[in-house]
Length: 139
Ligand code: T46
Image (cartoon, rainbow, N blue to C red; front, side):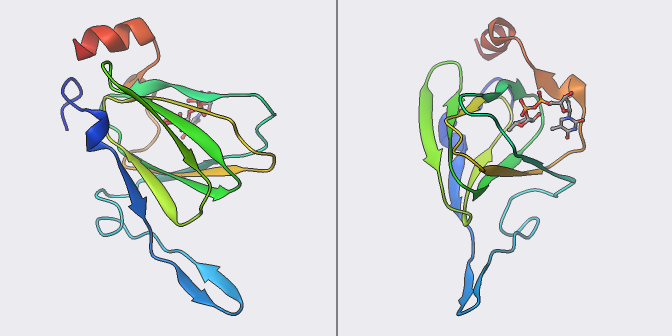
């Protein structure tokens, strides 16, 4: 996916498989099957104080799948032209974010956990953290 040309419509809400029995549920996420990339990193956001926001950046090459593993939060997506806010509150629904999309996460419920599967290891040089720079790259 091209950093400059990617659009919000290239991101997608993915319904993940849920295996249910009387003892509860399991959701498994398989690389290149349930998500369209190799999974090279897993991290999670938790203990987020009320009113705080996360994100506020875009990535040059990174693909990510975000899941509300517990609780709920909002994700604001921005491709430089269009913005879209989506609420996530189910551990079997993921948001695929492609490169070149500005994202902000807020409205975290108490005790919420945002699980993230990422296509690459952590690399600060992959981040675009200045919104004006982001808009220039998208124009
Ligand atoms: C994203 C949203 C949803 C690491 O050392 N390794 C890592 O894998 C990550 C993700 C972060 N860090 C360090 C870098 C910073 O010193 O943790 C600190 C906080 O990172 P950041 O300000 O980027 O955290 P968020 O929550 O704003 O953003 C993170 C991801 O960085 C980002 O890719 O999409 O979660």
